[in-house]
Image 1 (cartoon, each protein chain N blue to C red):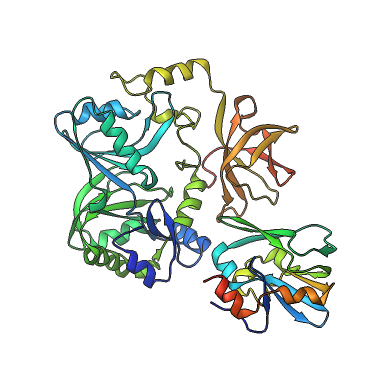
Image 2: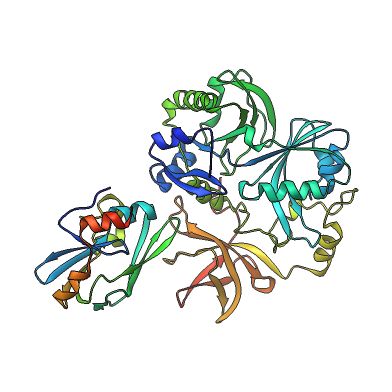
Length: 125
Length: 361
């Protein structure tokens, strides 16, 4: 199981890479493995902001569908347009080319509530 | 949780294991899409040992099977297989199953894993003729070898010709083990199902023989995930999704196995005759769309904002690369080429009722 040390995690199996005010968000290796082949990443259209714990889209796999939840509040800067044609990048490279959205973090204090790699690892047993 | 004789093999192959029908079963090894395509393009092997095998024996075997199943067992000759179902007296489906005629006094009924205890109890309760019923599920392993190259693979390890027609079976030795070799499957491809007894060592011997013989065809292990997407591309019903105790075989599109004219009485005969006379209120139909949509079991189907049915199975077809679904739709909206909407998270997505199979063979 690949759980990079440098990232923060949520119990909803998302990761966020924090670089100053900017956060990049994706789903974890564990999550992509549980979902199986991803066939569509459906980010809410005209998404401008995300809210902590609220759905900003869904991820469709062959067998199942799963909501995407905001790890914190923030303004959306960029959506990974590559996933439109290649949703399988979420499976093959969940921490790299399979990233979902880039945000401007609204409140740094919220980040303290996220899990570090070890806590996330423990949460999935 | 039970394990099949091949559990260790699946684990060694790195399969994702899930609890299904009381068994720890492989749902996928590499990827559902890759496994699905391996079966359509070449050959794949499924461990489906969780399925139930009930033997019916004795002088009254025919009378019993004819009474408890809806298809006409008098049409079966030795060496043939029949797709059938058992119904409750109200016409609801107990289970769908395969009936094998082994001899005049021996039939094998192969039932769904998730139903096997319920089914066996149902058979015992309705054994009015006093046939001998034996649940031998725990003694049998079952491998499905499916795909255009399946015949070439099995022929290499089998001591008999396996060129029989679809829905026929023979008794033969494969990899030195006695088995039933049946030209059946749940994928729509040329394929075989191998029933054999024995322990883990025997099962692994057969598994390894198949993979050695299939090497030149890039034979792949295939999990329950691809089993489901393969059967849905053909429009085959899955018990618990498309059929259950609340659906009757006629509305499920299983009229072709519901032999209302068979001479002998069978459970639900009178009710099903009445259902047919009165006309169907709803029908199980295949639905697809060119839109980006992901219909799932339980989603509503709508016409002009009115709910007219529900999706019972849905996925993205790995071959067509578009959504495919089956669902019950009120009869007046259920004609081929009619438009119905998938109602997905508050949005109506237009779709069309089509003809089966989704993937033409």
